Length: 226
Image 1 (cartoon, rainbow, N blue to C red):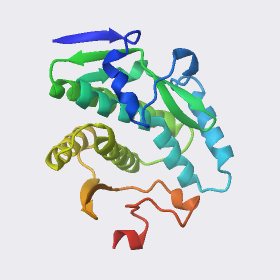
Image 2 (image 1 turned 30 degrees about the vertical axis):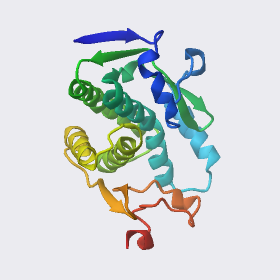
Image 3 (image 1 turned 90 degrees about the vertical axis):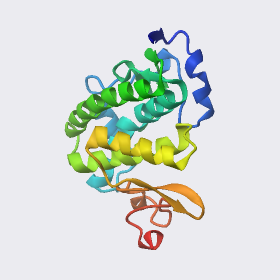
């Protein structure tokens, strides 16, 4: 059974607000929908906020801004509630140079988790292609690197908001998303200090802002890799 639900009844997704990565906002506070010159304005705001960084930093972090919320929301909703959020109907709240907070117009409930995940993968594959076109209007980022960045975000989302607690399920889920969306990427899960963590395949270049504060598994930090 498949049922489409209007956002006027958010009850099926209300539990997701326990995750700090996911925040629902009213439509009046969510105006960013990748339309017209919204992406260009966001890129300019990011550039203004970090004037001394490299073009690579701007491209990487702009891409992350464009995709991270739809990824987290669909990972959480599909695994926890068997729901696929319609990303083409999604609007987001922009706060200066960052996006945080989403308004969901439509989502679909599926009878099984597998069907919900399949629907999310189908939508996100098209979503990534469209967003990469938006990205190229403002800056350059290779398709391979954009895929690795997206894969890293997906892995972190699976670990933090999917509700999949068993390691074997997390590994299987990551492999499914990687293969379907990118035909595989190097992102993996590893055990470090008795804790499952993401072994990143790309760098967010936060080191340009604070060289003494790398991500735990930063691929550009030698001491961390060792």
